[in-house]
Length: 569
Ligand code: ADP
Ligand code: MG
Image (cartoon, rainbow, N blue to C red; front, top):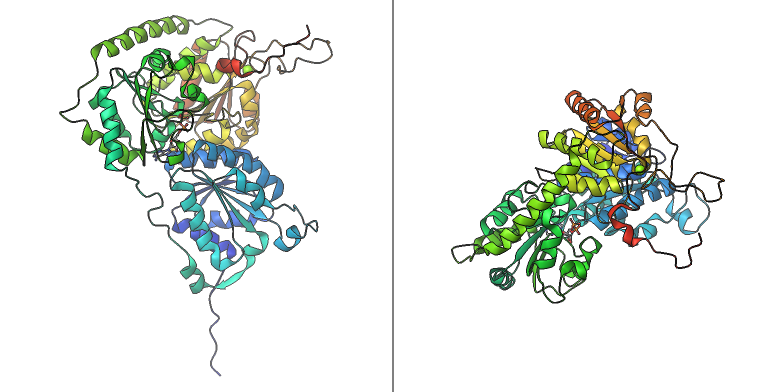
């Protein structure tokens, strides 16, 4: 009898890996455990880079910022129930920030979960994820893995980018399929984020309004940074001559020292402008919802908004000229309209802005130059401002309260997508996840400027940084607490609610894992230590002792704290 050849087989594990690889996924961020431990191992064996974290929220934040930096969905891989929930915070944050990301979680047996019979880590993860992300899918059969991964990728990056949840029950991984049939089931996503070109009538409406402006302003948001239309955006600003301000993560799209930057005259331009072109920026709380005192006289402003999401229009105020489309395409058609008919920008507007800018810049410079000890925020930031000026290709990660607000204003950025921070929610805890992914995705040196409190949310990942030997230099602005290091318990029983152990030495944490730890007390020492770290590329943590008296409650947003009218002394 003839020997029957065994048919070649594949299984759920390999189909997931093949589907990701087919769609250009090169890196996965995650935490191993049941049921995805072997999936991680096999990914690594198949050439996907796997970065294993200590906590899923940090892995999720890494995936999210990888999505922002690359326009490909960042992948986070977690175990079921608790691991999934830890990753879900990052998925929700990615969705809020319009970063493309896919959270892939293993899950328990459907039959048991749905009958609530108490499985290992039982949880209806799909139902929980759904309201917190852009889309959520579950794959039950191995032959559907290709479609499931394709749907997740397209949902994450098309239109307004966001977070997608992909639920993979444990049983799926072991399902066996004929290899040829398996390969045929995979889907390569074609044109995952198609261009969206606005209608000519909408473009004309916007250009007519822009041409009528006496005091025009452009606001660049992180959607503009995400679009990677850097040259055309710069051309739009320069050819039109319209002053601009960058939102936090749009800093560096044009260099902060650009003559048309009105960043140092922010309050003046928000108040006095007459036509505002929003380019990938939302009129949310970060822009006072487009109304109120900060925006000058009611009715004094007309808005042109460029956004890929139609429903963003009129979210807070009337948008006189909505331009729905992807920023790359929209900026191209706007540029075509900035031709010989362009009236230019009235010079009294630009000279008003320039006078204000110069005054504010010299006021700030006086605060930055001092080499005092104990350091205040400005002293320390003056040193870091110089570092980024000398190393403009380094990536700056920034979180904290005062550490965030003051660094945003002081440290100039010179290149696009080099400033990564707390984003739309103003969330603490993105620091180490963002720093790790920034180093992995770009290969550039990373400077993470962290408040001591903010650092605590992801601090254990210094081990991850050392393990993968990443060129990350962390500077902790250590003022012994949240906002300040001076709170006391009025009853005298415990430490105040916002203070930490005085004199903590975070630098020792780095040494525990073989990285470099340095303690500094002056701006000069700080500058030298950061330079050494950046030159060596070694994982480094610098504990920068900041005066515990320095800093203000909640940084710039203290007004958001509710006040008690019956506060007892
Ligand atoms: P910022 O906080 O910097 O103001 P936001 O996150 O509030 O920025 O706004 C970013 C906006 O950019 C979102 O409304 C999002 O829909 C939009 N956006 C993201 N990517 C693109 C793109 N490629 N083209 C057009 N709009 C985009
Ligand atoms: Mg602090």
